[in-house]
Image (cartoon, rainbow, N blue to C red; front, side, top):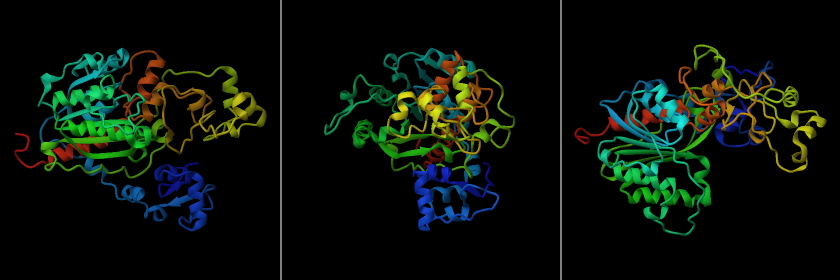
Amino acid sequence: MKFPDNYFSAAIVADALSVSKRNVETWTKNGKLIPDLDPNIHEKPYTKEQLAGFEQFSAMFNSTWDQEMAIAPVRDYSLVELFAGAGGLALGLEQAGFKSILLNEKDKYACDTLRTNRPNWNVVQDDIANVDFTHLRGKVDLLTGGFPCQPFSYAGKQLGFEDLRGTLVFEMARAIKEIQPKVFLAENVKGLAENDSGRTLSTIIKVLEDLGYKILEKDIYKAIFYKVPQKRERLMIVGVRADLYDKLTFRKPSPYHKVLTVRDALKAGELYEQDVPESTGQAYPKRKAEIMSFVPEGGYWRDLPIDLQKEYMMKSFYLGGGKTGMARRLAWDEPSLTLVCTPAQKQTERCHPGESRPLTTREYARIQTFPDDWVFKGSDGQVYKQIGNAVPVNLALAIGKAIVRMLNTAPKGVFE
C-alpha cells in the first residue's frame, strides 16, 4: 500500500529504529506513538510529527543531503580499493570525487566488470597476498576495502599484527602498513561487530591502531537512510593516520530526506528516470511459480493455504522459528529485504512484488543503486553474486562525501 510522504508504515519505523514491528505496535498501545489514522489508510501509519522525537527520523526530516552532494574536493584525492568486487564502493567514491589509482580483486568476472565500465581504472587481478603495495607509500589519500572476514575467535588474547597472518584482515592491514594512507575506510557485515561478543572487532581495531592509526568512526550504517531502497546494514570503520588525528574531524553523512522503496527502484521516479529495463534472470520451476502465485505482496509462507504451506516447507513446516525469508515476496511500498547472492534461495527468497518470479539481474542492480549503464560481466549466477556482494552505490557516495568534507577542512599546509 502506497503511503503519502508524510506517513510511515509500522514496518519502515521498525527497520529504522532496529526493533520488531510488534514492538512498534506495542509502543502505540503504551502511548509512545499514537497513530493519526486516515480513514483511507488501512494499516497503521505514523506521521512525521509522531516520529520527530526519534534521533533517526529527526535527522531525516532535517536532511542536508542536497548540500552535502554539492561538496567537491578542493584537490584531487587518490583512492586505493581492496576486494573491489563489481565496483559498488569504488563507483560511489568516484561520484563523491575520489580518483582511483589501484583496485585489487581476484575474481575474474568482477574484474571484467570493472574494466568494461572503467577502462581507465588500474585493476590488478590477483590474490591480495601476491600484491606489493610499497610503491604507493605516502601517495594515497584514502584506502578502502570490504575485507571478507573469515570466522575467527581471539577471546581473551592480546594478539598483534603478525598473529593475523593467513587471514584477509592481515592482508588489508599489510596494505595499510605498506601504503600509509591518510585515511582508511573498512566495511564489513553488521555481524562482525557482534562476533565473539565484540572481541573480534576489538582485536582488528587494536591491530590497526598499532599500525599508527586512530579510529574516527565505527558504526552500523542502515542503507535505507542513504537513498537506497533496501534494508541493508554495513559496519563502517573510518581511521586516520595518527599524525593527522588532531587535524581531521569526521562527521556522519546526512540521511536522505525520505525512505525509498522497491517502487522507487523499479519504476520511474526520483531515483531513476525510467522504469527498470528488461534483463535476464533466474526462473522458478513450474510448481514453485504456482505456489508463489498464492503469496500476497509483502507476504511469506505463512500466508499460503495450509496444504501449500506443508507442500512447500516439507519438514521445515514442523520445526520452530519464523523462517520469514521462505516464500517471501517483496512489497512495492517498502524497501527491499537485503539482497543476497541469488534471489531464489529457499531460505532467503526475493520474489518480485507483482509477478511470480525472482528479481532479474537489472532489478537487483537497481535495488543496489547501480546506474542502468553499469554493465556486469559473466553468467546470471556470477552477476547476481557480484551485485549481492556489493556496497550500495548511494551509501558509498554518502560516506565518500563525508570523507571529502573531512579532507577539505584540514588546516592549510597539512597535506603539503
